[in-house]
Every structure is written in C-alpha cells, then in structure tokens.
Image 1: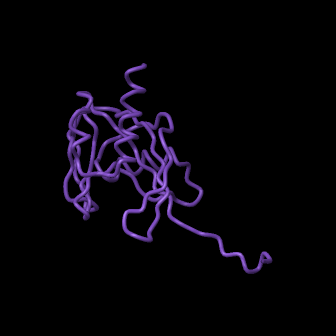
Image 2: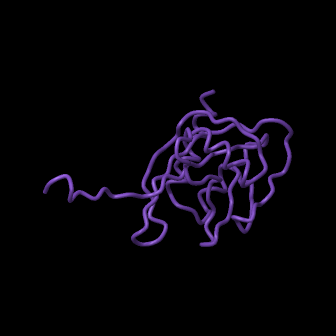
Length: 140
C-alpha cells in the first residue's frame, strides 16, 4: 500500500480534570447517558492539554482551578464504534470554596467522597483516575 491510500484513524481527544473540594470530595457531572463523568471536553487545536482541563472545569462547574499532574490516558468507547481518547489531570481548586453550578451540558452536578465513587455508574477509567489523584494527595 502506498502513502496516497493511507487514511489515518481519527478520534476526538477529551481532556478531563479530577478536582477535589476542601472536604476531599470529587466533582462529577451527570451526562445524557445517566453516567457520572469528570468535567472536561474536546482539546482545541493548538491548546495545551492542561489548559484545556482548567478551561473545561470552569465552563462546566464555575470552579477556577489549576492543573497539576497528568494522571491517565486511555481509550474510551462511550457508544459502540465511537472512540474517544481520554486524558486526565489532577486539578486544584482555587479561590473561594463555592458550590459548583451545573452547566447546560449536563443534567446534574455532584460532590462525592472517595468511598462513594466505586458505587457510581461511571466508566472504570474515570474511577481509576480519581483513585490516582487521591493516592497522589495521600503522598503529599
């Protein structure tokens, strides 16, 4: 096969932030599939992934954050045949300890303790990223 016949496989890149509040609860949003997910969204052309996480957390919850370490990267198939490359960052909340607000992109916003996360309807990859951020906090 020559190069002119090659068609690269493409898929969106979604950058997510794992944010804990002052009571160590993780910020999650309920989507149209009735799953909880991390705040985040599509990486813009030329945008740094960490900046995308900060922007998306603010757009979807009203919270101002700073991005910390890269936690995970993984491929997610939200519906059969549709793949999304997920990138997660640990984020720190900045400023006042205000309640998050739900954006028009989601049905509900919630704050959950470490122990509550395992029982939620959400992709295992998100649960793993949350666990990695809690483990990082425990080491700090």
